[in-house]
Structure formats: structure tokens, C-alpha cells
Amino acid sequence: MSRFLRQGLKTLVPYVPGEQPRSVKRLIKLNTNESPFPPSPRVLAALGEGETKKLGLYSDPTADCLRRAIAAHFGVSADSVVCSNGSDEILAFALDAFCDREIGMQTPDITYGFYPVLSGLYGIPMTVRPLREDFSVDVDAFLSGRETVVLANPNAQTGVALALSEIERIVSADLNRLVVIDEAYVDFGAESAVGLTQKYDNLLVVQTFSKSRSLAGARIGFAIGAPSLTSDLETVRNSFNPYNVNRLSLLAGAEAISDEEYFEKTRREIIRVRESTKAALAELGFDFPPSMANFILARHPRISGKALSLALRERGIIVRHFGDERIRDYARITVGSEADMAYLTEQLKEIVGG
Image 1 (tube, rainbow, N blue to C red):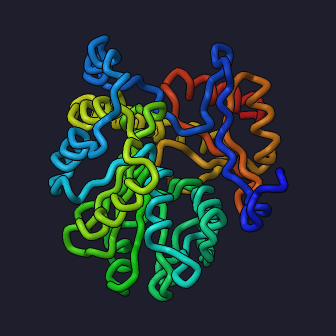
Image 2 (cartoon, rainbow, N blue to C red):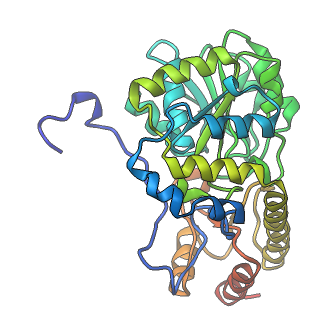
């Protein structure tokens, strides 16, 4: 830490990304919820030599082709869409735009680890609402309070999802309070709240291309909301980095969201493998919340979450372990390919006995 760091950042605890090993040739990587599938063939076809030759030129600061493709997919107007360099950036824009020391944020105690980091970075007070014992959101706890509500749905650590009717209860409880729904995992079985943005101007829905669109490395995120909200986000974006989405990512995103057939095929396969893996884990004595994401948060009565993670690492499989009090007995396992999950199950049989 240098002597020049401003006082407000000296106690900031940054977000810790999941491990990205330099070589994964000998590892099965099930720790960061990436897709086991490559991007759509249409993405690969679009990023040809002709486009790479244009990298000497700035990208379109309006992200027009991508915004229009997203808008067409969801049936909203293009001015309801804002694009970003990953969904983390759009979350940062939103909290910067709509929260301050007087209007803080409220979020569950077990959720995406970037929320408390952004709270600390921007000096935004954060109220924590505990999840229920079964890791479901206590909706009643979010019906009051002036603070902006920030919810990952499905939840980023547990995979548990709220029904759309419950989301609407929170949004409609106070029309003068903003609700941000982070739908990074929504395509794996939950209901999207995008449709509600046409009814409520206090709702912002955030999504990403990293999970169900197989473009984690392209860094594409976006938000959908009333044009009054997205206009505010555009003000923040253009004051920070108007060229925030690069040329190739704009093309990749537009092609990926337009290829419905490939999206449905890969999404359904991940869901199928997730459910078969749940059944295999249950037979081995594991328990887990009802995940509607592309991962499973699992624990076993005979081994700690940390010990399980280390045992799997010794066998060439990386999963994620969190030290948070309520989930430290669990390991979070990304749903990989069918072959990856079969090998995982074999190794777990040997580790826990089954």
C-alpha cells in the first residue's frame, strides 16, 4: 500500500476472482461457472480476418449493433438497453448512479461477492438481509427500506431462484425505490424479470453473456430498464469510458444472442447434466439447495467443504470453496460437460465412499 492511496480505500477488501490456472490441460475446471461449450459458430464466423484488421479503429461508442440485437431478442426498445464490459461494470455504473451515503443498498447475506466490494469502493452503506435457513430469500425483509435493492436471481452462490411474482412484490412495494435484479444465471431455469421493466420504471435487470452465451472471455454485460434509467447509466458510462465494449465483442455478442437454436441446445444440455449430477450427488449422500443455475452448491456430512475442494484438486478437478460462515461446509461445483461430471462423480465416490 502506497502513501498516496486515499483514506477511504485503505480498508477496502477487493473481490477475489476464481482461480484461472495458466494451464488447464491436466485440470477439469469447475470453479468459475463458465460454459463447457464453445461460442456459437456464428460468433466464430463473424470474427474473421476482415474484422480483426479493424482493431486499429475505435469501437462504436453507442454499441448500436449489440443493443439492437439484445432489444430484438427481448422485445424491448433499443433505448432500454445499455451495454458494458461485463455485467460487473454495469453493476458498478448502477450503484455509482443511483446510490450514495444517504441512499445505500440492501442485499442478502449470501450472494455475489462483488456487491460488498462495490459498496466499499463507492462508500455506499450496505444493509444485509439474512437468507432463510434453506437459503431462500426472505422477500418480506425487502419490502421496506429506502435503500436500493440488489438481488442476484438465481442467487450467485446458492443457485436458489425467486419466482417472478416475488420479484414483482419487491418492485411494487415502493415505486420510489430502485430494484436491481442481477440475472447472470437466469437462463438455466429461472424466470427473467425483463418483462416487468415495461411495467415498472424502478426496475433494472442486469444480464451477462459469460454463462449461457459461452462468451466469458469477451466480457459483455448489459442492463435493461426504463429509458430514463438507461439514460442515467449512459451518462455514467460516457463519463467513464465511452468505448467500453471492444469491436470484436460487439460483433460476437450480436451474433450470439441472435443464434437462438444454438443457445437453446447448449442451455438445455447444461440443465440436463445439472439434474443428472444432482441425482448422482444425492446418491453419494450430498445435500444441496435447489439450484436453478449452472452450478451446484454441495456438502457432505463426512467431509468439510475445504477438505473436499483440496481432495478434488489433488485429483485434477478445481471447484470453488468460500469461507463465509454459512456456506463454508459447501463446495460450489460448476456444471461442466457430461464427461467432466461423470469423472467428478467417480472421484467423489472414492473421496466420500459410496
